[in-house]
Amino acid sequence: MSDPQPNFTPRQTDRWLDPGPTNVQVIYILYLAGLVIGISGIVGIVLAYMNRGKAGGFVESHYTWLIRTFWIGLLYALVSFVLMMVFIGFILMFAVAVWFIVRCIMGLQALGRGEPIKNPESWLI
Image (cartoon, rainbow, N blue to C red; front, side):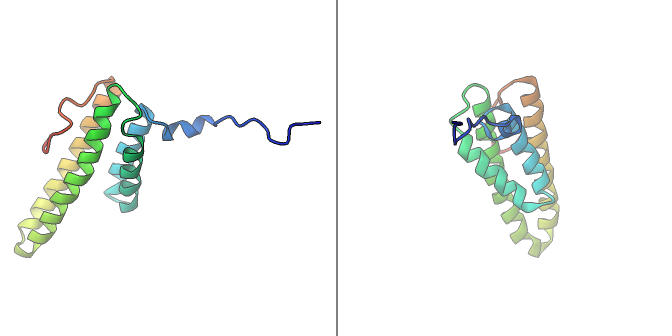
């Protein structure tokens, strides 16, 4: 008689959900895509919160960096939006987008080198 429940082995493609460098890379990409498709940034922050504290090592600094990038970027974007009434907000919104992209690229580069983020608590770059 055969076993009614076959053994479940995770597919190789499921690894991007596990805490670690691949997951961090996916979150960076989701953030960058979020500049065009807003919902992907929200998926990224959820993944970052789900996996923070589980990966260990240098990857933990990336999760902190990612979470802070999302919330600080949102704060900067809201301030820029309010200031659009006096037109300086348009310039600030562009600056926020550049800041966001630079942080994501810096994080991807550090991740590619296997290095932690040097100052994950930073508000700037």
